[in-house]
Length: 107
Image (cartoon, rainbow, N blue to C red; front, top):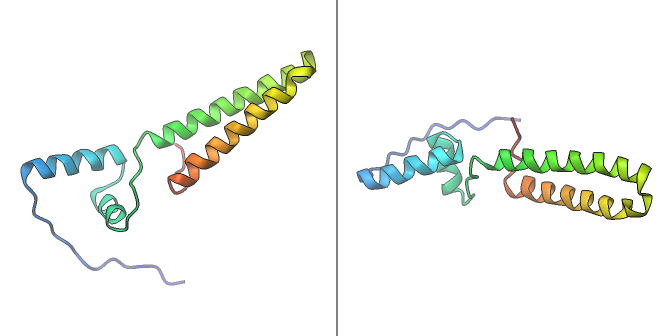
């Protein structure tokens, strides 16, 4: 498969105010300027740089729920279905966030 080679250069003039907003948006996305601009031009909403952190926290919550489920199954098995459902909702939330932001990986 042939890889894309980016050979076209686009230059844009901005006011100081526009450049300041652009720079802030690029910084918040965690991308470099070129990647951010391509995402905007292609109609993709660039992710906020907090998205990987959010995914990580959802995964941590899922791991805590899994551990709670193990203990509940041993001590209070009549409540394990509720914990299992919470764990499933957590997994669904993770998948939604992951797919909404184009498969961002966590650091």
